Length: 342
Image 1 (cartoon, rainbow, N blue to C red):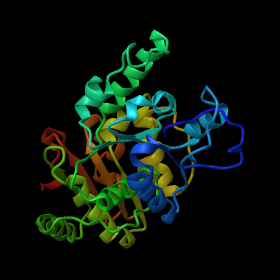
Image 2: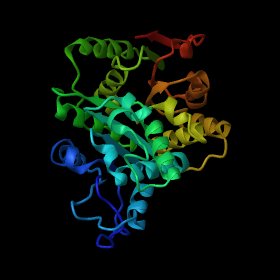
Image 3: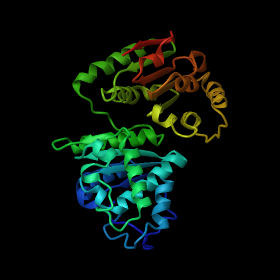
Image 4: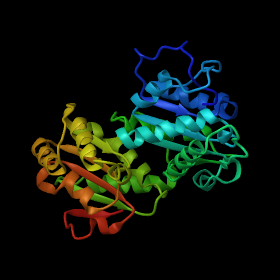
């Protein structure tokens, strides 16, 4: 958002938001951001977006801070003139604070800009006393830190000529998954991936409990395949869960435990506080031992993450299917129960 702050004309105290959208209004409000906001709304996701004249003060007010803190997910839309807006930068700083303290998810979108410029504060993303002459040095450093941290995250890059509606669909799809809701949007994927989706479905048609690994470099379509498979077969199981971006979530403070709590909530719809990953593993095994379950772990980074979330075949009831996507094939090595790497 572009100009924000401290107006008391908008009461957010009684409103609950799922997603906070951070953007520079003049760059994207009437194009990409408007389409994204409407798509989120159409799918029942309550997103916060400002009005042009909402914020009139000099400091970010408590209303806006509450919105950022209560949201489970934030979307940072980096555009060419984003860094000219101090309100965008302050919001980004607050979003990063929520990410570190509460595990809030941040989706970066690089809208006609290079991720490296955001990460390294080069080009139009330079933060300097010359460009921001009224700000204190510590403020400039906080903004640099926020740009560096969020710019280094996996996100979407949008270039001239790309399909905006396709990007909107991907963002909404990922928001559905991250908010622990069943993804309802049909994944549109290239014909080249259709055969891979069918290959996975063919393997999963066997009757025994199955673990299946999908390995490959980042960006080649592993998540797209897994999401398409999930949409096709999730209704065939008593319980289903899609845990997205396991590697990044596990890297946060108490990340493994939080992932276990998300998995348990998806299966039981009960909020259970877990004190240790060992306790979480026992609860998962106890809950799933007799239930046919579809579980997808997206972007698993190491064996510790895998072992604490899925253990072995004995954790799951008959007909269960566990799909793991990973960039590192060694995550699956030495585990004979995993049938195949796609």
